[in-house]
Image (cartoon, rainbow, N blue to C red; front, side, top):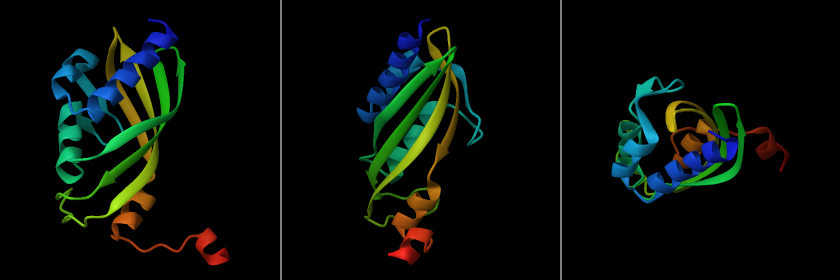
Length: 139
């Protein structure tokens, strides 16, 4: 697969997730998919969990780079917390946070993802933690 084809697969995954077309994910995600960061097997299960807590979640790819069988993307996720998520009762708060993911593609399907999200910002916006960062102290 070319680098552009690999990037197109990741764009299609994001489009599919944003449109909540989980049936199409079977064409894009390998059955033995693993998220190495979250130690999850099964992409649909993790997406479904997000939909329950954040039904309007939307990912925007800000940047995308490919090399070999890997694709890196930098994303902004926006959502409203209207359902329970990992034991956290709905807050009704709208949030936006960033992440970087490394996807590995084999035979035109995603087999692995490692992800790094700004969970400090995520939980701060939800009101779960208070954090006064450096810039807060300066301004």
